[in-house]
Image 1 (cartoon, rainbow, N blue to C red):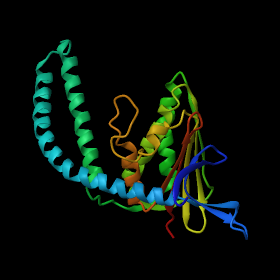
Image 2 (cartoon, rainbow, N blue to C red):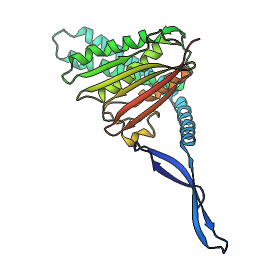
Image 3 (tube, helix red, strand yellow):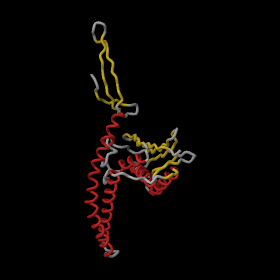
Image 4 (cartoon, helix red, strand yellow):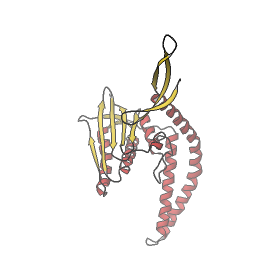
Length: 277
């Protein structure tokens, strides 16, 4: 048997794709005396295949996104303008104002989806500058701590940073957008309460790691293979562009992202970026 594709389970219960070849051993009389099975780890190959497929998907989306943006945004702008005028003409206590406001809100959501599509499929010119990563991450944590304190099922956010300053050349707006999405995802996965650990550490010689670990239910197995692809989601009301955008922002910053997740094991997201010398 040559080049048979199968999976083995790691000690942590994670499926590892392998290629297996079996060769029979024969004695001096030509009788079968045993067999040798050789395994080859296929994880890197699978990852490369996913990256190629991801690039093809984005290329196809790019052709569609430009047409969609033009076809949708023009009428959306007109509808939004008329809805705003209608809202101004209605009295404050008019019950119809609520429905008009819902129209305006829905238009805003559609426009955001179009913007995210364009972000994914078009070249981005980041505004890099030297930023204290500890300060940036702390600001994101503070933003969510206020929300978690107001919730009945509280999520405890624990942060651990190096004592020394950690400076990166990054686009603060894009980097913050990425962190806001990841932390929001983690909190939504722990609707019944839990703990989110955010750990920053140096990785010699010139890298920094940012690890987010939650105690939620993990990402469903049917989603894991395509979680970086646009429109992949299990959340009601979600379009499924979030992780695709996160991955693009990581790549813009010359970083790497790795996600480890499992049913009832929570999710660990490890981000790595080069440190400014």
